[in-house]
Length: 208
Image (cartoon, rainbow, N blue to C red; front, side, top):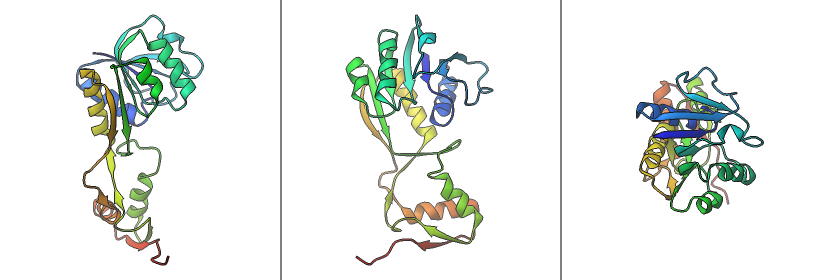
């Protein structure tokens, strides 16, 4: 499969590249070249800012595109106009109707929950891992029994590549595990993994 990936190999996109290459696909990256320029020397790279210039994509064809970097409707719309007749399947990580309308029966829209895993730069989950590893008293977030669902970026990437391979269409909520874990168990797992002496103090009050 000839696969175009819009966005840099920073987190989820990086795992998509890894999975696609491992499955023998021909990968093309289109991004500004600011993230991991030394990564994947064997992969074709097209340089450009999708917000202003998509000309490097002109005249090219791919079997599928994976879009992990479309955050604004206008930006997504520009990519759609260029790629409408150049790719067979469009996988968009978000929730915009523009893609479904432009690729009827040819679009997959995964809507992930909290993505975690290697190369996570957003500090929503890594903060707790690092803080708990330091040990001592940790002010725990929320109620201990609050349900939490997290999704490993590697699992999400592998599933997304399979959707592209099979040309699956539809909207999907992508998260796990089911049933959810209590927040206390997530924090305990971080403590166990770090062999830490962290002590958790609840930040919530039972007062109404």
